[in-house]
Length: 379
Length: 190
Image (cartoon, rainbow over all chains, first blue to last red; front, side, top):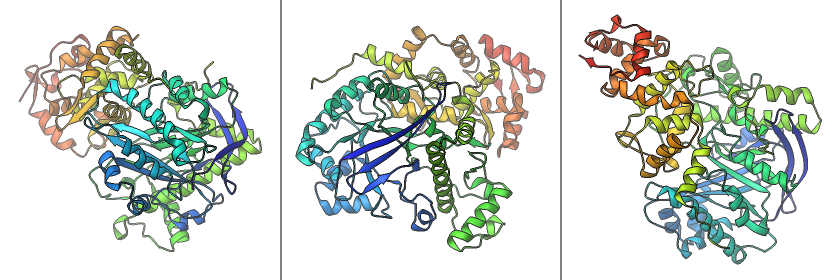
């Protein structure tokens, strides 16, 4: 059930260069759920085995609901249909985790939202297992002129806020969302629309991109909170791409997000692409290397780490010869990366809490080179 | 709460401020006629090499089909989602709003002077088909072709192509780059 959230115990660590503010906070939902460390969100491919191996098992459980307006209308207010739709797109591994229904609604053509649609969205958000009321993001198709999009989204937020009290208790606070198309400058207007709600939980949609413009929207949000001396904030990066594609090794752009005050990092939800079956270890996908804090292609030493992990976690013995393994290994690679990135994020939290300056300095040193000159602190 | 409306001029201002150099490069390369993804990748690679950027804004690497930049791909996808570009089977093209934004950034934005020169590069290659643009990048920037899975077929294409009515090997890289820099047309014949 949607509950009031509270954010407390901020421990910030700011780099004098202005390109990194790592801030650990505790997020509480209702009376019995809390999260007090950085985390990569649970996604639908995460399983109990991988989650069970984590030292910090409290994570943000992302239920990413990406749907078209037609689909929303098809679900109608049919609770059963809504529930099975949500279940098919998420994973519920533990009742103590904070569940976040993050809705992306796709609107195309000239079809605009009607009053019934707002009811459907609110019905989804007030679903029994959802813990936080986060404003959905909208994505517009080519049928909607660019110049109308900002206005449409602002109007959507205004309408949602006006209906809020019909669906949830007045004392329940709302989480704000920022769609990927939203420019930096009118963000002040968006904050104004939320008015007295004064959201301190902010979900920023990266739409399957890397956070390569931290000095834009992110810096503006941080500046806003700074102006109001609000330290108890929780930043959630939605649909954040973890690494750069290409032949070489990529920096870990997902881990880097903690430098921009992000507390929870949502997995990337890539658009459907033609499936190309990997022919060898090197083309299977990127593996997270926690020593170097990057994502290389799988070479012999990473292959052996992965084989060991598979044996240890799943009791499956893989062959070093890629072609001799009949299993599709990509889902396991995603779980491996989930475990390793969460372990690293847990370590960063511990370092911040224990003021381990050397560890934090090392994290900053591993920021992608392109980002080291960008400032996220605006005066 | 009063509805907040923004004039188009204001939106152009907002959007131009938020563009990264890579976004701006994509907008400047794409026009109202569709540009294939491959051509976009290779033109941005040529731009990068031509101006010998000390800090690359496109970060091209040698990939399975030659020089490829995830930054360029990501920018293009985001610009489509933002309604600045549109994508169809023929490739990317600017929307009406995208065309206005392009004009706006050319007129108003303090663009890197080299970025303004992209028109020369585009004009120089305007009559070169996409596959030959690929061929030119393989020929003049061999390092981008080292991981290519189509290297042999591109080599065959290059061997059968004439560049400004002479064998490709007779033009030096410096000459080729001068053509691009100065907007002198390059003609490929088979």
